[in-house]
Amino acid sequence: YFSLVVMMFLGEFMLGALAFIFREQVSRSLKYELLSGIQDHYNVTREPGTLATIWDDIHQQ
Image 1 (cartoon, helix red, strand yellow):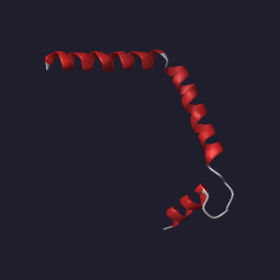
Image 2 (cartoon, helix red, strand yellow):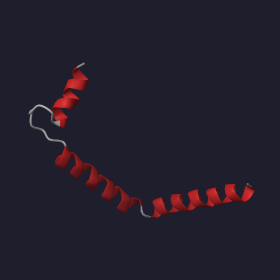
Image 3 (cartoon, one colour):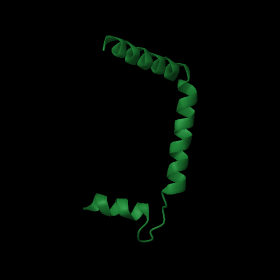
Image 4 (cartoon, helix red, strand yellow):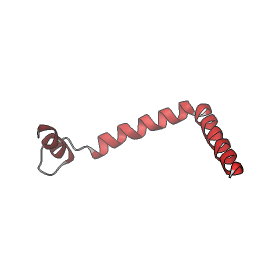
């Protein structure tokens, strides 16, 4: 059991260190993916059944 806890701690430590080392690249990639996801998948037309219309209806209720 103790060895499993140590392995989990080492794994989390390594992931944290890698995230710190590559934080700028991860930040750029995440920002790009989120913006492109909004632009590609959030249809701003007011046609019935689009994501924008659904969200507007949910927020008005």
